[in-house]
Amino acid sequence: MLSLASSVADLAVEKIEIFILVLIRISTIIFLLPIFTINTVPATVKAAISLLLAILVFPQLPLVSFTIANSPVFFFMIVLEQVFIGIVIGFTASFLIYFITMGGEWIARDIGLMQGTMNPFTEFQSDLFTIILSIIMVVIFLASGGHYFFIRVLFESFQYIPMGNFVWDTRSFTAILILLSASSFVTAFQFAAPILGTILCCTVTLGLMNRVMPQLQVWILGIPLKVFFGSLVLIYSMPLMVQLFNANFEQLQRALFAILRAGGG
Image 1 (cartoon, rainbow, N blue to C red):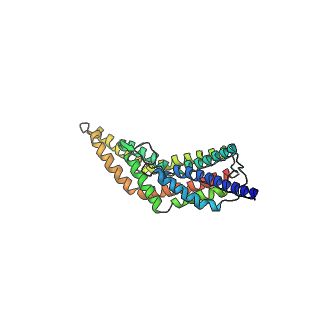
Image 2 (image 1 turned 45 degrees about the horizontal axis):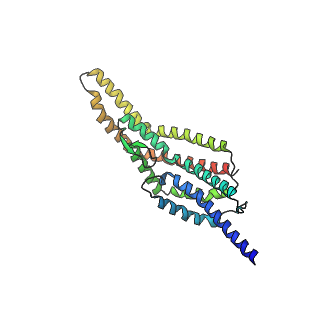
Image 3 (image 1 turned 45 degrees about the vertical axis):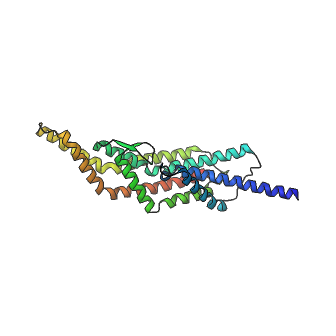
């Protein structure tokens, strides 16, 4: 009878430990998602969402192929595995808005409005254009239901990469992240190209005016003109920017599933 009670107690402890591992992976992903990196989102809210998702994921877990068996060292190694998986997925998801930050800074630099404040999504100093564009794109992303994709990735990560079966081959992850970084750079240039082209035309026009009328203070005149035409083109380019954001999101989806397949072997 005592041996049966001891076995039941060990099984209960094993379940609790597996739940903790699930919670660690999910919370790592949640805390690194670009939507939740905003300082205004309290840590308690992130923790509550992580706990709720862990409760939903736990009953659907595939069979675990290992036994912890009261081994602290083995448990610690599995914890490190879950943290690394969460970091890889969360870092990859952060590419959702990196190209906006890059393109917005190019726009602000050419317009001449580099003065800014803390960007809530990147935790770095950014200009006003970058912050406004980031907020607009994230609001569109949430309104279109794109956040459900990350919930799907979170659930399916346990199907692709069961606990204890992670393939520690970082070459695949590195290759995917390098390609994603290069693609973000190209997308950022496409994102900013209409405004950069407009500012270039304004600069060339002001240069010609300066040659024709040297007494005209074109550089003082150029600041409000660049802001006006740059902002005007930015407004009319918004549908194109949304299309680029959606295309980047589709590419991010393929990259995330490629990482999940690579991690599962």
